[in-house]
Amino acid sequence: MNPSPPDLFELELEAFEDFAASPPMEDYAMDAGTLQGLAAALAIGPRVISPAIWLPWVWDVHCGQRSPSFGSTVQANAVIATVMRQYNAVVTAFEVPQGSRFVPLYRQSAQWGAAEFCQGFMIGVNLAVEDWAPLLAKQSDLLAPIRTLAQQNPEAPTALDDMSLAAVVRDIEPHLVRIRDFWRALGNTLPPLSAQQVWEIVRDRLELFRKPFPHDAVALAHAHRETVAPRLVRVLEDLALDATPARDGNHVLHLFAMALLACWRDARAYRPLLALAHNSPEVIDDLFGDALTELYGRTIASVCDGDMRPLQELVDDRSVSVWVRSALLEAWKVRVVEGDAPVEPFERFLLDVGRQCAERLRHGEREPERFEMLDDVAGQACDIGSTLLLEPVRQWFAERLIDERYIDRPFFEREFALPHEERLSRLRRHRQGYIDDVAAEMRWWGAGDVDDDEFALDALPPSTATFVRASPKIGRNDPCPCGSGRKYKKCHGAN
Image 1 (cartoon, helix red, strand yellow):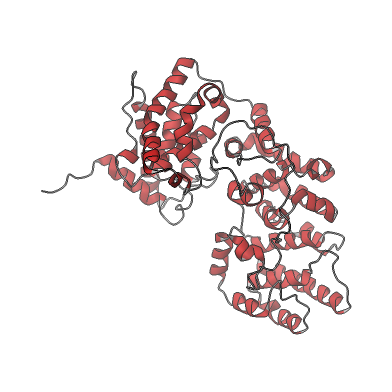
Image 2 (cartoon, one colour; image 1 turned 30 degrees about the horizontal axis):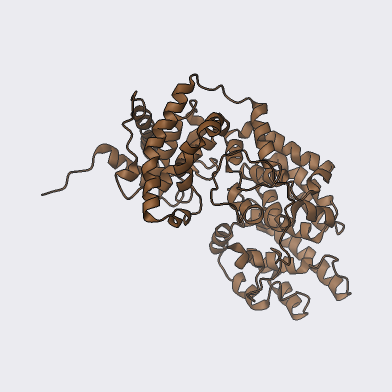
């Protein structure tokens, strides 16, 4: 007996899955289960949210910024139509006066999981997180099973035994109905947040270091980019005039500002970020810590307006911290490797900087901050495969002017030979290119040991304890202790 053919909607979902799994989209687009979870949150939430706000998150589950990469107009129309039909079907299923006709995909097929559904649901909640405050205040337990399975750590649900996990999954559907009924009983839909309210929420939740990671505030910032972006630029402008408020180890708003503006490619942040370079090494360390080598340069690369002259002037200025100058070279390199800046001017500049550094080292002049720019020049030349610098770098190795704990000769020769495509792939794979995901960039230094419930929405009070870095610690630009000859951030630190 032949099996029944799949229905039309099932075929549409399969086509959507094929699109979501295509090479340009596979790391960003929602799958069908996550999409259904998002639709459920939108359908039963406290107010209607425009598709203009939530559709970008279907294509970019991390921050709602990437555009979809359709192969044709026909595919675009088909995929978008499937998304809207899924949304409308979920809305209709919850319109039943008592109970609902809603059936989650994870009950229909093992292909879609309950965890993915819950992750999509929490994205929908985070898009209007303040609207959900009445439910959190009165019946926060209604979100408990959903939040449990929406944990970003994929291993977290396995901590439950089989019976507990099954119980959590069984609770999801009745809790969805109770959430819907809660809002129905409350009455009128909530008015939209004002621009000032949005900013106050984002600022208050991102200003000081806290755990768990503030996904809700980051999502709110993304959803209200036009409102939030100019205020974050102002944060950086004010900091360039007076860095004192951010020297407290708990203050991290400027770091969130950098990461968000970098995701948005907001060129208004370029000049204020460069202005910060003039601070003393002590102030720079207070402001950034290890984020100087991991975040600062790549943020500048992401927001650069194309004018490299002010960046060059800072690298040439020896009164600027050598670590800042190194980060600025990293910024220029990222733009070259990403294809947004020509390689030749960067090569010539590296050669000039390298020759000046080599001459100073020959005369016994060293940088005061335990790092030599010549080492970084060799590393940058290696990263871009510069034939112009190949022989000069080999000569510097021969003169023992390069610290081989930072980059050794065999590693240089091996990496130099890599084709451009492989270098670009590695850059992106190790998060060393443009910044696209705030949480992925910031959790390692600020909340790498976050609590399991990453999507917690409770308005937690700011931490009263200053964030203190573990010591001793390996700097991101230090040689990797494994002996590979690579920077720590490009070896074991990349993981």
